[in-house]
Image (cartoon, rainbow, N blue to C red; front, top):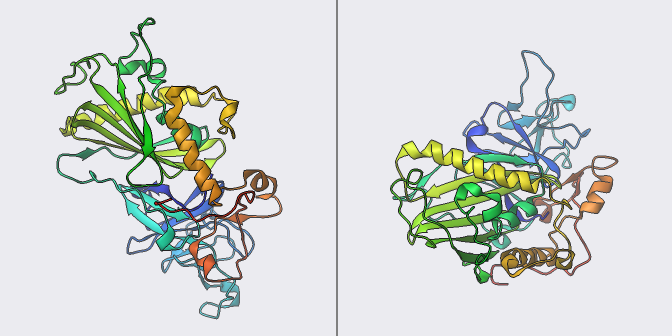
Length: 391
């Protein structure tokens, strides 16, 4: 897992101005809330007073305030933290009185796009951050988006990303794709090339599937010939994967998987499906259902993978030419590692939540001191090198 990237936190529709929502990302608890004007904020969830969760729970009762004057209120002693993470009031010393400068929690940059609230979880200044992925067809004429589908899965996010980059699994995992009639005498995965994508921060590939014609009963309006389906995609940062499915040369699907690493064995996937075919709204439900069914086929396989984490060396797996995209993704992970952004999971597991709590460092840590909660431990074995799109 890595700091210094944009991570999905919660769907826009799931966050109101009435109550906060606690979310675990990168193994640490965060809390999201909205101001009365609707601005989303994301903070570290641990109160610096006595370690309470800012996201609650509150005691049962009629009066359970959680957001007051655009501040999230700690349920333990009522400390009030604004959207920048600064404590504005400490009731025990009197409302409106001076607050200790150390009474602050990490606050993260937020963007709300594509029906998702994203937070930049890291301490890079704005000019050095990887930008949030730009979906050029979003809200463009001739394209339609399905509602964001949220999938909770019991496996590590890197395993999920690599599955989406794998052109060799479709015939075996997804019989609903129509590829079950495998000819053992001729079947093989066609060769393909990988390259860095145009937006930087990841890789890209396209692959030709020797696919049968699509079933016209299912795919009305679409006609294909055998072997006419191209599909592929790439990665953006460590936790985002893009899939292009070109049923016709200029018609098909664009799928975006923004993955929220919760822990080493849990991931929440925010899945946005775009299409420039079958644009009638009557297709929204069936396409949504089909995407869920296909995802379930992947989930069943991935929840049984062993080991849980991606192997630290490619020699620990017998990789084939069809795995080029997986290897290219792992090379990008190594770049993020060399930049010093990888979380030291071994050290984190040893201490976090026992005699110490950690927070993902926010950009304000570069400009101010006296932070009570320690920054999450990072792997220190590699030289810290600045990483940019051009590198």
